[in-house]
Length: 494
Image 1 (cartoon, rainbow, N blue to C red):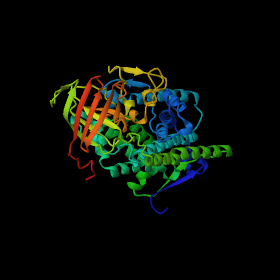
Image 2 (image 1 turned 90 degrees about the vertical axis):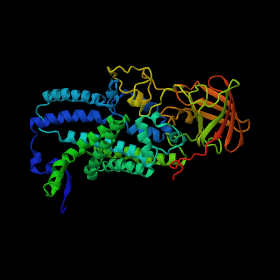
Image 3 (image 1 turned 135 degrees about the vertical axis):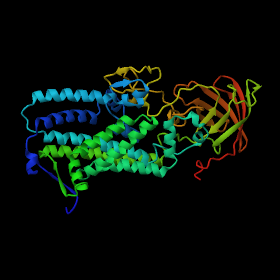
Image 4 (image 1 turned 45 degrees about the horizontal axis):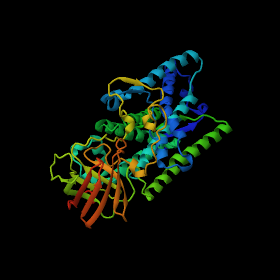
C-alpha cells in the first residue's frame, strides 16, 4: 500500500503491540453490553419466524420464501397501538427493551467473569452476526428493486383514482415506480452494499454503503408513514456497528491525510471449525444469493411479480369505461355523482380484474407493510401491549399463534396491490367463460370476499360492453359501458 487504508488479517499474536494489552474494565463492560444487544438484534427472536419456517414448502421454494427468510425479522415483543407506536418514536420501544436486557446481562456477566482480560473471539463473532444480517437483508431488498417488483409498473387503477383516496405511502411508492431505472439503481445500491459485506476485504466499504442506504430508507419510511422504518434503521445501526472499528483509521486517512493499516482480528480455527465455517458460508451464500437470483429471474420470465396479478383478462378491454346506462331491478338510474345505487365508472385491467367506483361503499382498506399495523378488531388505544411470541402478523400467524390458512383461492384473488393503500374503488377478480359469455366475479378484498356477482357480457363493438345479471347486492342489473378515449401519457410510456 502506498496511500490510504489497508487491512491486516491475522491472529492476535501478530497484531501491533498496543492491541495485545488487556482491555480496561470500561472496555470490557461496553463490549459485554454491545455483544448482548447486537446479538439479539442480529438473530431472529420471534416465535412466529420459526413457525413460518416450519410451514415453508422447502421442496418448492420461491423468491417470496427467501425474502421472508432474510429480509424482515427484528425483535417485536412490545407494541404501542397508536400513531407514534406504528410510525413515530414509540415504534422503537423494542430497542429500549433490548437495551434493558443488554444492560442487565452486562452487569451479570461482569459479576460472573471478572478475570478474562479481553474478548477478541466474541467480538469477531458478533461482527460476523451483524455483517451477515445486513448483507442478506441488503441483497434481499436489493433483488426486489433490481427486478422491478417492489414498485411495479402503473396500471389503470392508479391513473383513474382521485389523489385524496391514496395514502401518502402509496403515492410515494407510485412516484418511485414511475421511473423503473431509478428503482433499479436503488436496488443496486442495496444489493452491492450487502454483497460487499460478504467478504472480509470489502467489509468496511460495504458497511459504509449499507449505513447510508438503509439510513435513507428509514428516513423515507418516517416521512411517508410506510411502516418499515424500524427494520431499516436497525440495518443502518448494525452497519454502523460493523464499521465502528474502521472509523479511527478512516479519520486518519480522510482528515489527517495519513496512511493507515487496520489490524483486523481473525481467530485461529481448528480444522473442523474451518470446515464448518466454509460449509455454512457456502450453503447460506448459495441459497440467499445465487438461488435467490435464479428464483427472481424465473419469476420475471414467468410473469410472477408478487404484487401484480398475471391471469389474462378479456381480450382488448383494458381501460376505463363510462357507465352510459345503469338499471337496478329494472329501474334506470341516470348519472348522479351522489347516487349510492349506481356504478360511477368501471376499470378493466389487462389481467382478470374489474374495478367499480361506487359512492359510499365502505371497504376495509388493504395495507402493505402489514406488520406495522394493528389487525382488524385490535384496539387502537395508545396502550403498551406485550406478546412473548413477537410480531405474529408479519409471519402470517393468527392472533392465537396458529399459521394462517386461507382457502385455496386462485393466486390473483390474494393479490391486493390494485387497491392496497388506496380507496374509492372496489376490485373484483373474474373468471370469464368466453363461450357462454359469463363473468364470475368475487371481491378481492379479503374482508369482503362474500361479495360475488354473476354477469353475462356482450360486446357490440370494441368500445362497448353490456353487462346483465346479479350483482353483489343480489339485485338484477343491466349496464352499458362505453370505453373512454382518454389516455394517460405515463401509462402509455410517453
